[in-house]
Length: 102
Image (cartoon, rainbow, N blue to C red; front, top):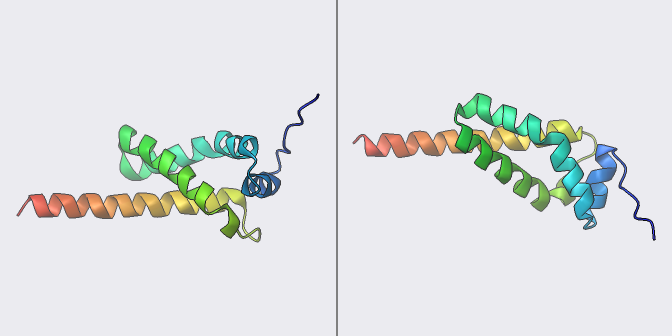
């Protein structure tokens, strides 16, 4: 029996992953993990936090596959999720530092 690979078309990968195709989701992760890490590191300047945000981004992507709007590129959608998570992290980090300084 031959196992077919999902298409490398990002919109099709989203659709397949939304239908439960784990391999399609893995292909999305492989395709965009460099972008996500790059954004996270640029915004946080922290290797460990960037790795955590990378994982959190793809958890968020998985949970929101059904909400993806194909009017936007997959790259833009994933980048927006990453930026929002990073901004949330930076706000909470500032808040923690601010409370500790009192």
